[in-house]
Length: 232
Image 1 (cartoon, helix red, strand yellow):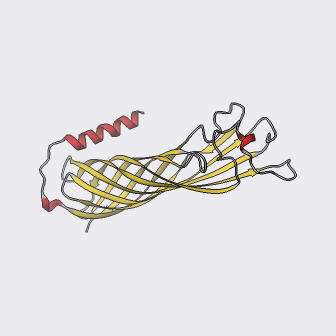
Image 2 (cartoon, one colour):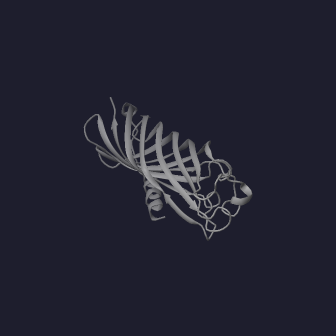
Image 3 (cartoon, helix red, strand yellow):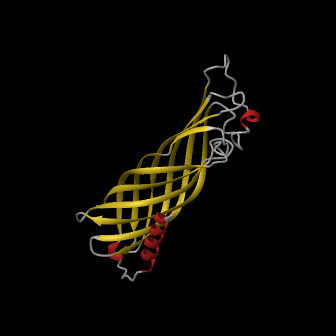
């Protein structure tokens, strides 16, 4: 929560500091970044409300992204790109009923296409802070499986049995599901010029919600990235 407040303050500063607008400051740029992404699984979709279930999850992975943008002046710009959010694992081991001792395993892979508007504040000739608001198309590919060591013929995962572990049909089939979701994007960061044509950027982005309750399960993903930016 403290981190969110910090970035919110950065965005407010970026939109309220005084500036002079110069048409000659407009420029096109491209960039690429790497960082750390974090996922928060929706407890209603992944059985986390079941008190007797043993759960293990991997909620962090590496994000890779590429982007391009255009600054109309020192304040306003637009940006679009693609982000590979990474893959996250989720495992549930029921401790009661027919599936006691089995393992329900998921691989939750996510990526995004995004477009946003960017508002910048020049602190000096080589340093600025910025805030971003936009939209993203979030895709999830969730591969699920049942590892059963004591059933001769492991059945499918019927919703009537798994009902104790989740409020959706995420657990109802083995195999893979894909879902798409349009959501809002918030971001903020800092950028430092290295040369006349290059810069280094550090930013935080919240991509909002991913997934569908009845197919892939829902989750929220945000990340920190360090990017290299080039403008011709």
